[in-house]
Image 1: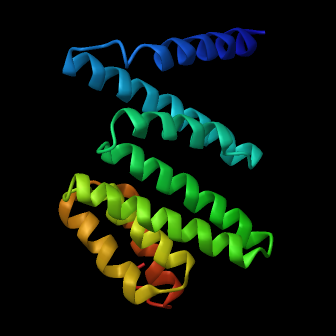
Image 2 (image 1 turned 90 degrees about the horizontal axis):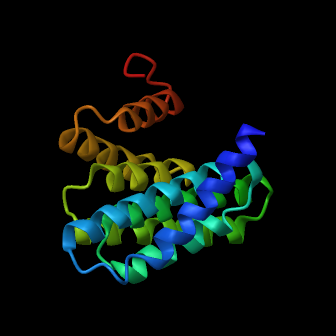
Length: 173
């Protein structure tokens, strides 16, 4: 019951956020509203991980990027959504769909880097895409760049450990 009530409140909040950013003229308020919508997109992404349906996350991210085409965090999240969708397609044996999703994820990561060159999360994403495509020579420099930019980035370290493990370099793993 509490979950249903909370979920209903979330949906109402999302609708409010969707209608507000275009009416906001203060840049700080607009940024805050877009950040809130990005958090909503993350919730939709998490739901998609469980259900395999990423349509709500994609829709929310499309709206966000229409409002702010330079929002690096939105590109990174859309790349993560594409990566997850590609991974599911790969697991289902749909190589063409997986390749298309991985390409979209890569394009999103590169767009994030165009908007924000020091975005560690975008480098992690590029490294993770390369890992799934079995391209360790591409993955390692991206992941190392992520660590250089953000020495506390746990995902970069986990991905580097995975890479080392895959290459039977157990001491580095």
